[in-house]
Image 1 (cartoon, rainbow, N blue to C red):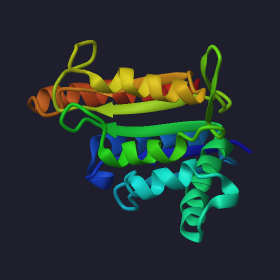
Image 2 (tube, rainbow, N blue to C red):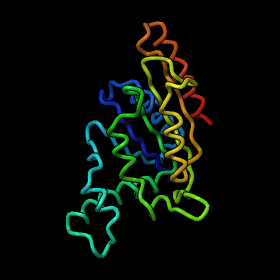
Image 3 (cartoon, one colour):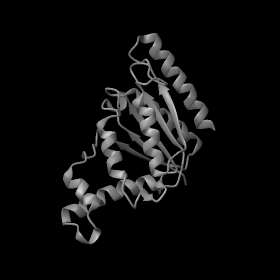
Image 4 (spheres, one colour):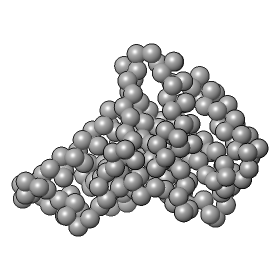
Length: 201
């Protein structure tokens, strides 16, 4: 039975364009995988704590020296990593806020990037420890940034995910959403057409 992990990061919840698009993809995926399991992690409704000194030190403290609080912090991170490992397909809904990814998504990343768990350093550089799988990223933007220097998201997300071993990424962009109703409709229609193609593949 295939498992899909959906991670939404729009502060607008289900009303966010990135969430709406990722929901549409998941619905199509379920139609083609009726026995599949979907795990949804909504980072707006259930935010992950941002990385602070206490959490960072918990991650780098040897297991046999962790306090009870540190053990709880690491167990929470372990849960997120196990959830990601179980997924055959990963879907991200990612709006652009002030030229970056939502801070809630960065907090999620800070909890799944753990040395010895999801990556390791070797004499030739870092090596991702996650088994590769399809990763779909629904990127919703108010302006048009794809292919420009202002698109800080695409390179960052590809770099981070590859660092963990996830290189099979596919971006579905919906841009110009705040540039008039016509632009918004064209962008969403194009994204929905791509969703139909991907889900049927």
